[in-house]
Image (cartoon, rainbow, N blue to C red; front, top):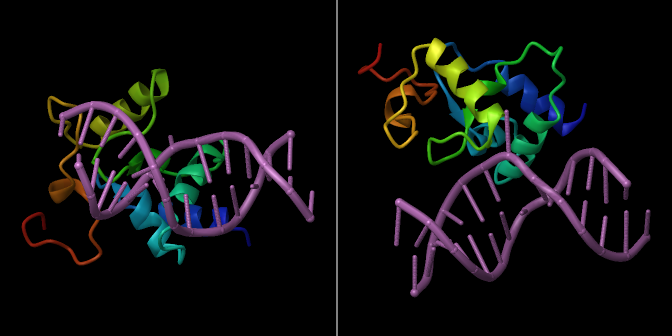
Length: 106
DNA sequence: CATATGACGTGAC
DNA sequence: AGTCACGCCATAT
């Protein structure tokens, strides 16, 4: 099992309407401190894999892609009810994936 | 086997 | 808020 598999496994667990950061993914996959790998793994995702790759963003609450792909990801997220600030950022406090369900959202 | 690369994170300035 | 440097290391070539 490659590191990518571990990462993908975690990504597949991100619930609808929530987002997770690369660092968070890496940590949950047992690869703490290797956020880059999480990102690289996303880049290597096969289109036919059923994976919510769009729910993974960087620690600043922004999409790490640029160009048309970024637009695609953004629309996918908005379709799930995730909001973007005028500066194109997502409020992780609100939409971040927390294992311990935050009372404020529940 | 040696290097380069990268959908990142964090801290310093 | 933006830039720079550095750490991290599995894959790719």
